[in-house]
Amino acid sequence: MSEDKKFTFDEDTLEAQREKAKDLIEGDKKAIEENAATARNPKNAPYQRQWAEARLKGNLEGKIRHEQQLSETEDRLKSLSNESQDGQ
Image 1 (cartoon, rainbow, N blue to C red):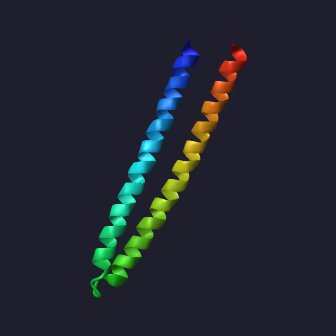
Image 2 (tube, rainbow, N blue to C red):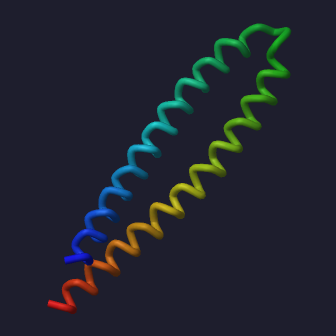
């Protein structure tokens, strides 16, 4: 029975990570739109472009780490599922 609880916890964790990824993507869309509007001002363009590139690079690196964690969680979930099926 404790295995069932752990299995449910992993499913909840996986869903929470998916929601976090969706939130990150929505935040990036908003940031891109804001940066594009500010970058239209010729005085701000070079600085805004540098800031936007740095931010997007950081966000991309964060998303890559998040995808790796998500993949690891999915693998662990499959492993637990296989273990519970083997035990039955």
